[in-house]
Image (cartoon, rainbow, N blue to C red; front, side, top):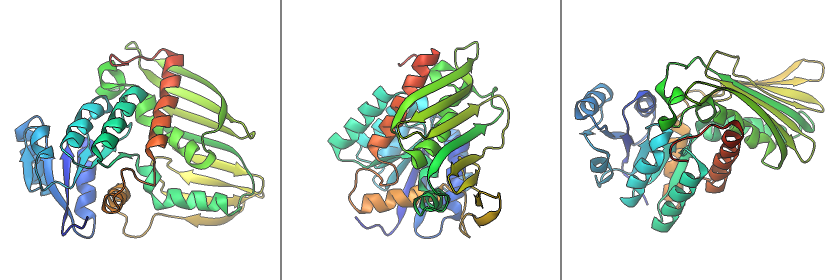
Length: 329
């Protein structure tokens, strides 16, 4: 399928929709800020006016039924991803769905089954999976620069205790699905999924949602990953991958800003930064979605449906251990 314009429609007009609008504003080529939908028409119109969208809709159904929309970006809370992504798929619209993909693995299975049944593309908007710097880290590991990978750590913490999406069970709250998911993806990108044992702990809010969690993943081949996320405070957001001949430091595991390679004498041997002209980092998932759709694929090679589902199952297992429950579990 070829497009003279690739028209993006966004469901939800919150802060993450603003981020995508900013991205599309700076994205070169024939990507069009086409439609925005909110359940509040005035809010949609204000968003469209601010960012230069062509259409503003007061319902999500109107947007997905617009024949001009080529890709629907789901920018609502993950508690509502199943409902909103299903609406788009039923209308035959390709979907780029924000992380966490859904609230739990059961919902993910339902959504992916629907997409396959309808023959409609869908992928998860876990932006780190698509970024050039993330791919560079994998290249460094695979070319043997740091020798045999042995240990990994990743931390992502922001003060977010006032956010409804953190504290409310009906919004699939907690630090794990909002922040910890990035650390899990970081570990899986570079160490894979052959995990023999997981040891974890968390702290819970009065609402029963986790605001701090940590996991140690023991792999069958002897490697170890230590992950930490929190909605209580800030941290350095760094990722560290150590090997037999050196180590890699990644600045900001959810949006890599720098990759630094050191030898065993702690000497910097190479460093890499985002490509010149990068807008926000969100653009790579949009570009990848378009390429996959044009190739007739139902999933993106950057993150397969099986990988998305496995991550949801991994987080389900952690929540079950901690006793973190959602109304729709």
